[in-house]
Length: 253
Image 1: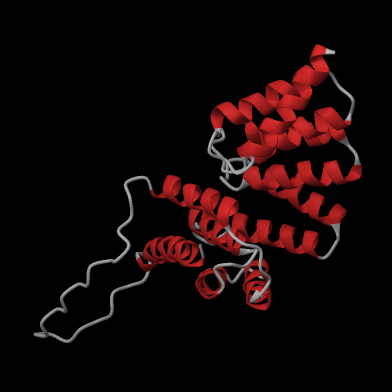
Image 2: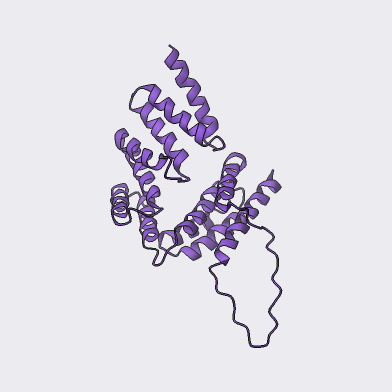
């Protein structure tokens, strides 16, 4: 299991490293020097790289043993991310995942690298504001984090990272017991047009909040069933199937 899991992580990090390598300028060479022979990439990217990364995350979520060794290295990379040093953070997350493939935070590390890769743009303004939002949340400043998320949505309404702000607002609303706002923001993320990797998590959050507020169980059932139909391979699918069975029993009583 350890060897298989390590191979999965190494493959994922090899592909991620290849994506970042494209942005690195080629070293200069003197005139007349014979160009070096390119070494084949041992981890050739598949046609749909993002889908492959997401499937890797799902596999890791299901099979990864729980371990906390190396958490300090993850925290170092997280702090780099939250201060806006994205290239250094990506390197740190990749190094952490390679060195500690059994750690509980490997999924999060790979997801952070995916987040950086998918949201880079000149100036990185939206990504920097999202990193600041996470820093506020990590510090326990939920109100300030929510304000930063709303500011980000107002300033960058078309940014791909808007779904992360919306999901964060859904989580904060859930923590406050504001079921209505939690469901509203979660459904924005879960919309089929968003194509966000957070969509299955948003569907589950919306379903859970529907149950928590005592609303019609049939509404929660529809949300859970949508998750199972749209994301059957999600690591959330097994527990959601159990919730569906429980709701169906209640509806039959």
